[in-house]
Length: 248
Image (cartoon, rainbow, N blue to C red; front, side):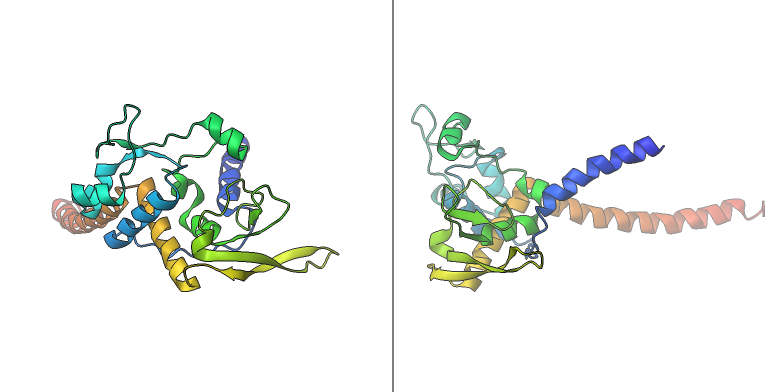
């Protein structure tokens, strides 16, 4: 029994550490999976800033259109800009793959670029929301940038033009060293802080949807099932009383 408990704890602990990163405070992501407009905006943000390198190979374009209420013309205008290997326009029913190979990514960035379909489930919405907003200048990194939620990350800050540039603010850690206590903007971007937070929230909302497209339907169905069970329990209890009244 003790061995089984130890195995379970060892299985859970890495997953918890992976989600929480290195102990950085995670900001709560304002996610609403029922907000189709937000998911649609997030899909546009994803295609504009993530999709050139990161695939979402377990999702099809037309599934996003169906779930968010886009017609084919809007889908093509907003999300489909690529062609297949034969030079033909990408079909709406195609998977969201990219041309970048792992070999090229390793030579360019030092590591393979991950597919993002399930990232929100693996990392969590709060981690993603914090990660995308906590890049800062670090001259010791190849890209010139580092990240609070993902230290020594290989990815550059692709949203820098929108967010601006931040630097780390250090404080004494009480042990003779320094720790980062926050970030300070040293160069403004094209968006205000509030606008960038809203932009990031839409992007993360889309990635949460991307990881589990049936989530909203599943939750809605769950409440219906619970309501059915509650009503059924009443009738089952009354039937039980009627059936056993003569026995007791």
